[in-house]
Amino acid sequence: MPTLRTVKQICDRGLASSEKRAALDAVAARYAVALPPALADLIDRNDPHDPIARQFVPDAAELDHRLEELNDPIGDDAHSPVEGIVHRYPDRVLLKLTPICAVYCRFCFRREMVGPEKGNALSAEALTHALDYIRSHRQIWEVILTGGDPLVLSARRLREVMKELAAIDHVKVLRIHTRVPVAEPTRVTAELVRAIKVKGKPTYVALHINHPRELTQAARAACARMADAGLVLLGQSVLLAGVNDTPEVLGDLMRALVECRIKPYYLHHGDLAPGTAHLRTDIATGQDLMRALRGRLSGLCQPTYVLDIPGGHGKSPIGPDYLARTGSNGDAHFVVEDFNGRRHRYPPTAGARGA
Ligand code: SF4
Image (cartoon, rainbow, N blue to C red; front, top):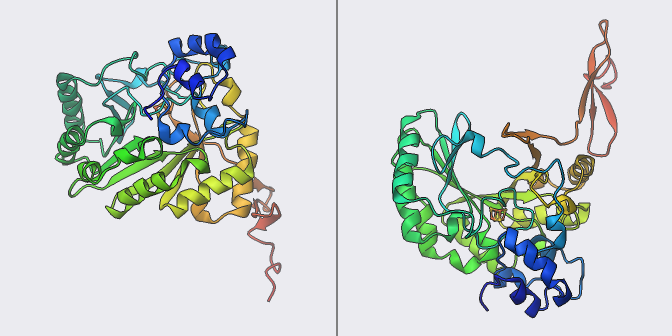
């Protein structure tokens, strides 16, 4: 079965009601649609709240734009010195090679920039300028390939780019952000893995995965091919209403990631991308979920809950606080909360430690 790329194809597969077709066509005219078979097959058509469908099947609510929403919610454009580069933090840059993805997430933070209608792959000339920029900025320690999804490119093209980057002396770490291992696991061939594994420089692969059901046997096998080859795998998840906003689902997701040798890295608070209010939670919900994870799961399963500050000011951790400073006049001390929610004075008062 080919990737579903139109609302008609999605309705014909029974993944959306034909009665909604006109409204959904209006959504598809604005935001890219692609639903590959590996994800389409996961959708339970009898569940009107299916968490996979919520992420990938267009919804009329996407045309409900709120005042606080922004076309470029994390401020990429404000930090783009040359085409294809975003230089927000001193020691690292994003390199955007393509606006194409294997699947288009309905909550995408770059939804105004990704898709076949939203731009072209970086031309050879633009890539040369982007690489020159990286070469001439010696503070750039890490290059992050993002997009679009870099792993939709051919192994040959990826190998060329990775080799160019690895040859830059001051670039010590390469990172790739992708959803391909869950969206199109068969693309993760031995050849593709060899192409992104370069000699002498570690490559980290940050996988975007939001629900434990996305980790099918095929996706797990794709991840294993990468981990076995020595690529370091990180998990990036977006907190989404009706998808993973319960302690049970979020906990299962984090455990499944760790079982696949993917270290949970970030849990992103939903960005203020246009038409995504129906998928955003509030920050208090996210903090409660992080407390629930801390109380129930191994330290390996704990991501950092982060907010990309609108306007391009970067990410900040927004998880719950476990430490408060209190007291004064010679009795200044901390109160620290344990994983059960009990509070403890630190340092303990004299004699409170026992014998
Ligand atoms: S894979 Fe990433 S860039 Fe592509 S649509 Fe999903 S969130 Fe956006």
